[in-house]
Length: 121
Image 1: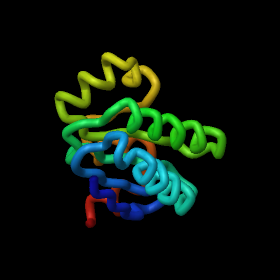
Image 2: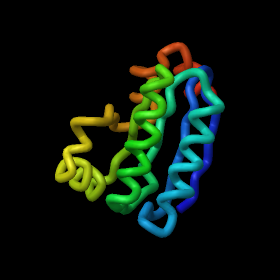
Image 3: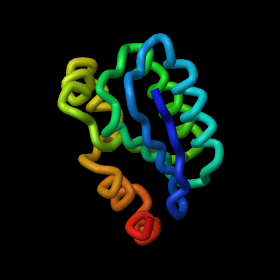
Image 4: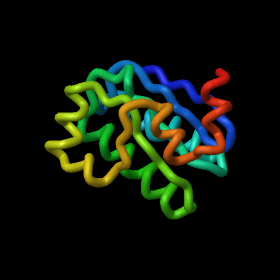
């Protein structure tokens, strides 16, 4: 799993690639938590490069989502591949997290003032 973060206006965009499973779920959670701490705006997670997420990865998402919610920070997940859509649907996490087709859609909805910064990158 690779994780990279980019500040986009008031938002923090975190792009993840590879697999998220028990072997790296803690580092995934720690990376998201660190990115969330760096921004006063929404955290947008681009999972378009992720081909699998386990229950441990979903748990990490829930931990970061709850921490952000307690701090008043929006959270969105973008770019789910078909297998991840199925995993989120079966686990009903599609009803918990705001899901978007792309990172641009997530920024447009959660941080509209940051859209021009996203388009300029």
